[in-house]
Length: 380
Image (tube, rainbow, N blue to C red; front, side, top):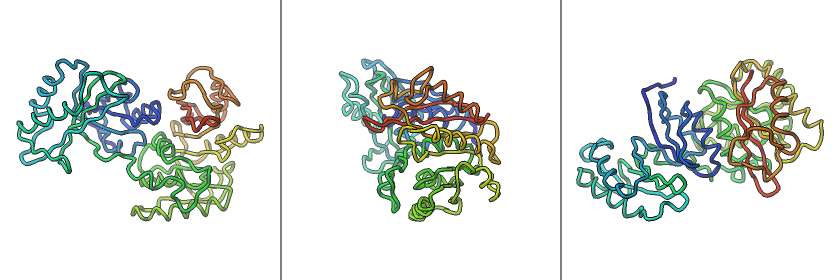
């Protein structure tokens, strides 16, 4: 059920891992294009109550609401004091509070975060708050952004990062592991790009070790995975069973042995209706060595477009190899750019022929000699 409200506002702070993915993911989760400060901070004003959706983000570090901001260091203490005295934090008698602060890119010259936090604590105490730095009921967060040279502050909405626990479920920690396994962050971002509601079944037609399926399970999102390699099918099921420690309903996740080129027929035979697609081709971390592999990929795109449930606007995310060191790896790819085996224009034309319109592309650097492109498309 979608929740709508009037002008839900917040300051969003990205992790710094991949700024362009952060901005794109926030736009999708908030259903509104945020206003950008520098590379890691954005302001969003939406009529959609997006706070719950932010809990599934792969790129978000902080969410502040209500909030204040300024660039004037000379009057900073007066401005924050006024903001606190206006009861923006909605004091409830007996509740406790803590003041936290963080610097981005070294912060701002002449501004001492610790001193500012102590000042705020004093004002809050004078306003009736109990100070508790260990387990407070409310947290006031201060962001000192050395990129945009803004100071942001506000009530911390997400005190526990959405990525909490991810280290424990990276590919190498799972019972079934292969070097081709997709990073959990990329799998989560990809799912956020294509999920339209919690009932829609998302398909991974080349599921490999099940990285996308695992993230779907953690979101309680119905998923179906398909792989031509029976070892991968068994391994994906093993990894899903490993997730039972999270008390998840694994009945929402199904894995089948089959060929991605015939995914439409396989889904139809099993009476499965899907609404989105996410996949990382098994050769996605290497350059396309032959026309045969390109044709295979395009055949998958064409076939899955015909799947029952893939209607106009349905989302697809896939990962493709590109030459490393691509200019603008932290920005969406626009214009005519040589990606190595093809140009952006050629890629868009090929997708159009198969029934998909590319909405965005993000270069993902892996290491010095390896990079991939996250391609986000909608069915046309």
